[in-house]
Length: 234
Length: 234
Image 1 (tube, chains in turn purple, green):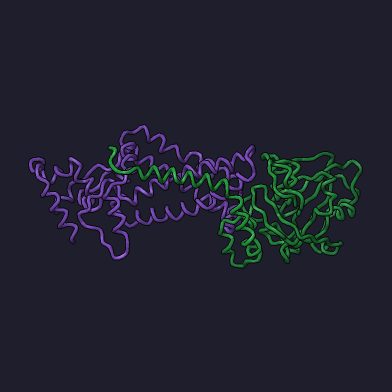
Image 2 (tube, each protein chain N blue to C red):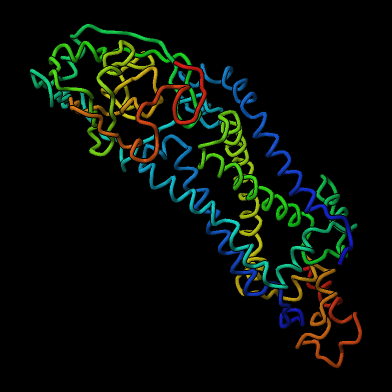
């Protein structure tokens, strides 16, 4: 057993995990009901337009609520700050996505990589725009018709972008069981953290003094890093 | 932790800006898109163009769980209430009566408009002449054989020659998804007046608001002069 298999790091608090779960659930309701309203064959299959519209609107209006509630949590606010800020490492991480480029193994990625930061910002932007245009569509009285048509236009097209982004999000999650574990239990193994979010793992006090390495050995950076290097090479 | 550039915030604000711009110019973009896609979509057997959010194709709205089915043989239209000769019509009966054809747009109150749809069937005034309207009658209550959907017309509206009991649409029989075998086409009014799956017409002494009217839509649904919209009249 490698030391990194024993120690793990706290990644997400309970409040953050619940906010994620609730947002995901509401987003799921929005997308499924949207598909029923929008895709002809599904509309034919399900019908019940009044009920589907009601569920879609309710889920859409509730969608920002979990994140607003989570804002009360200092850990959530700290993560939002982290997601907002792009540092040099993020540019390097993005550059490594280009064809024939490999990510430098020692890139000190923070708690979130550039892709996660962009996805988070896109999601917040999308929720806000969908919320605004959705309100114009739902409470149509009093809005000039050209703005209502415009709101429908934006709502329609952005829903496709959301679908694409969310498919990517789920695809990446499906392919990373440990990332999912982090969202499920709130903790991730040190080895994974060192491989995917090295800068964050290194900055974490527990990373250097995990149970397996022992607190006494914690003054040096080398043991934990060395262990991860070997693990990463398997 | 003010390290790094606030790229996340810029993405969010950029999306809000784009969304707002889209709401303002969306209508003209959509009009341009519709003029290209609309004619294609009416005759697209694959349905692929329907997935493009152009808003120029029919969208399927049903208020109940499944599309009601009536065959040519099982279909009956029951006309009663304040009439001199309560009657029942088969599809053959309707097709043997004088036919009226129109090519007009179909404008939905939610914004989409399908240009130049060919409709034909029995003009509603012709049908009313066959059954003989009682002196006390002031309105029509239309009901769908889905058991839920209802609509209303004043007697004056029902006497217009551009209101049809339609048996053909888009150069073929009215399909079940479009409300066949027999539906209403009320050209000058928003789509919800064009009741699908027409099963009954009852002459009444006062307007009985229909399914969508009870849910907030205008009882007099003139295109361009109701529901707060200013679409070009049909």
